[in-house]
Length: 187
Image 1 (cartoon, rainbow, N blue to C red):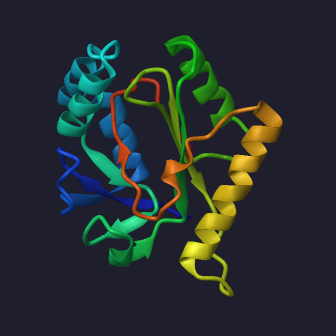
Image 2 (tube, helix red, strand yellow):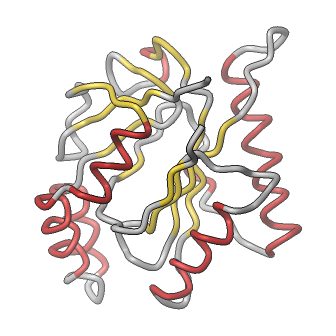
């Protein structure tokens, strides 16, 4: 059984030294059940009408992970072990209801089969941790980019979704926030 492990970083986003590593199961539990995370998420979301303040609060208060693997420092050259997952970030949906519905629909998608799905810090976006194959005849970076590109094209063709392509590097930070209905694929 494959179990993805990611690197966990405490806030603020300027912190590039990891706090720990965790399984997606432990991360899911943290997203769903951690009371301080729920409070921080609520505080961040109170600033939604002020984009600059929202961004600052998100960067100052929320922890983050590197979904692509275990890193000794948050930079691509510091990858120790790839997780076999990458993050897809879908932003700027019309409402929180639409974000929850899309989270659930994409979690059930038979092509993507995300390991983890949760509503993003804004409340109107979705984060998906999607597994991919590490090919023996390609570098980790090549396998990662090829899988990500295929998933982006699939989401665009099947669901007409526009993807946040800023998540295209191995060490890309993914902010973690509270979502009591986050989805975890049981292996």
